[in-house]
Image (cartoon, rainbow, N blue to C red):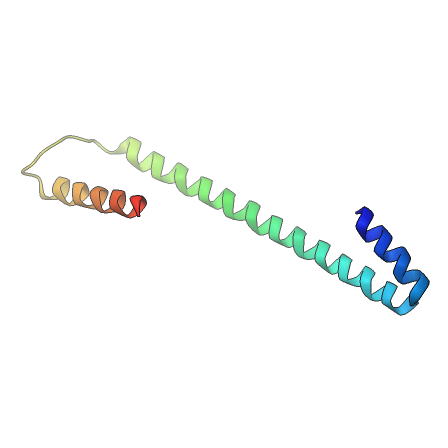
Length: 88
């Protein structure tokens, strides 16, 4: 903020209209920063909620290795594909 204060004091001494413009730009930047933080917070909250839902689904599922079960085979294949994607 010291840099902004020095810049503002310089602009005040040079041109009053630039001061107004500079203050307006700083205020707009501050509002944009606040909006970005709000979106980031909302995204993290939604992701946490999603993880909790997945955790609940997995806790209700019965896991057993059954090579003859087609659903088990498909799930294993999906897990392997996901694992490969994460590595890339």
